[in-house]
Image 1 (tube, rainbow, N blue to C red):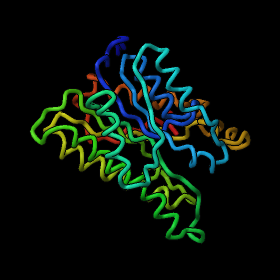
Image 2 (cartoon, helix red, strand yellow; image 1 turned 180 degrees about the horizontal axis):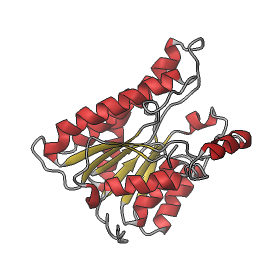
Image 3 (cartoon, helix red, strand yellow; image 1 turned 90 degrees about the horizontal axis):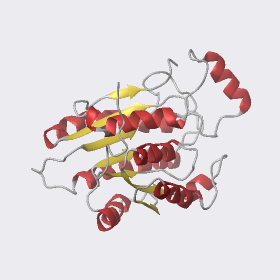
Image 4 (spheres, rainbow, N blue to C red; image 1 turned 90 degrees about the vertical axis):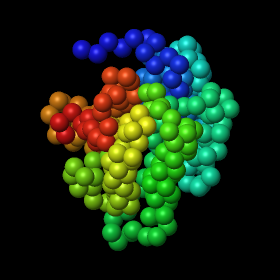
Length: 263
């Protein structure tokens, strides 16, 4: 049985992307890591949220940072467009100046719109690729570049958020699933490349997670299909991320872990 000590990750710094909504997975991950003493740096991009049906309040990201500080940890964040090639290097320059080296990276940010094969177009593919693949890969590079090539990274962790595209079909979301498939492919090979540095690389598939996007009628369908009688919560995903970020997970790398409640 795991014993989560309040200071288990004290002295560690985590960078978590895509933390703009207080009911999202990113926010739950930030709280879970703060609970065990981790310093937290978040990124968010409100213009993207404004285009989504669920939207977000203008000050949600800053409210969450204030909440993390009230939990007794140091926390900060910045608005950042991860579709820009220079964004990852800019992010880690700010983190370095504020907190020094980060040893945990959680790639939670994602771009997602729905298109079937008849609606699929170059612009949508490019938009998904820019954030979900290029942005994620360059964030991993910027994270690793904090350290020398020979340096052993104490508790070095990269944790990527994937989806269920290799588990079951997701028709109507072709650009999204193509890029999430790339996340899983990079996850495996990057883990082998970084193992000798002490950096583990894992991905999680949180399955259907209730972050405010599910209409009531669809939620009822999901719940009826769920073996455990409910769908996932952001906290379900966050607990798994916290485990993978902890010293308990030092021997786990290159894995895609499904946390789907049997769905």
